[in-house]
Amino acid sequence: MKKTTFTTLAILILAAVAFAQPTTDNSLPGIGSTYFFNQVTGNIVHPAGGADQVWNFQPLTNSALLYYEVISQSSLSSTDISTFPTSNYYTQSYYGSIPLNINFYEIQAAQKLWLGQSLSGGGYDINNPAQVDYEFGMNFGSVITYPVNNGNITRTTTYDAYGSLTTPFGTQSNVIRLKTSETGSGATTDTLYIYYATLPVMRPLLQYVVTATGQTSNKFVYNYSNLVTSTSDLESNSVNLNIYPNPACDVLYLTGNNNVKNVEIYNSLMQETENNTIGSDNSISVSELKPGLYFIKTGNSLLKFIKK
Image (cartoon, rainbow, N blue to C red; front, side, top):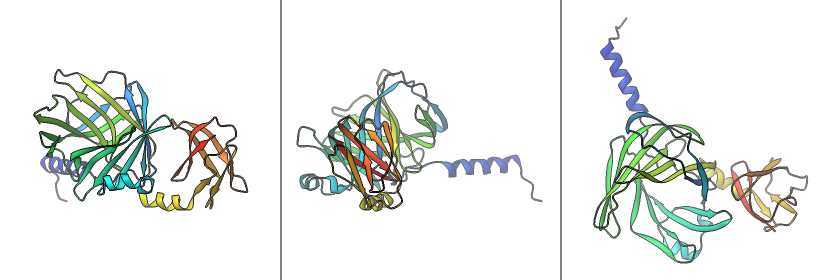
């Protein structure tokens, strides 16, 4: 029998750790994914970086600030498309039931770019040049630099840590931390830290800023109320499922209803309000709901409607 020495064992352990190291990926939440952008009011102590960290932010006090939905191109106006012709990934933000900005991204072969956003009062805010969120395939210790603010500022993003992360919304393993700082005329002295889950898709979980004096500010935690990990699956379901009339007073009807027997209804804060059985005529009663924006969830589909 081959003898395993302590040296050999150490090498095997190190190799296993290296293979377990998560990397940035181009797999993102699919169309219909929904999440809350929660503002953290409690204190955050900035933890150490490095490999195999265990971060626990469970005691954080937070409250929902904005609500986001990953949307399809069919939700955009012709002006949106002509303003950002290379965009291929979009998120719509809401404040309660009020739609705000649409963020436009371009997912390239090597990186995720933020091109800009629509403005709630009209017009657009265009990033020139486009902002690099991260490159795909970044490993622990990877560093990328890119220009922002018309090239006057150089931004540096470093993959400085990975491990497991606990927030009030659960624990995730295979989490990476990206650290971003700036140099140049008009550059901020703050450093941004964003913690990303890498499985089953890349998505931010927590972010905050560390100021030049070592204080933490601009603290936010993400809560995913619906995470779609396969865009193609959702698009297939979305084609088959629809609701009418919209807006509705007392009754909605679900079309393309194959074997769906129940639906969940959420308000604009993604709090479940009802769990309804679908009638034999594919009807859904909404008479008990107060007027406002609601979502019907069935399978991977999230359908939006207005209760009059």
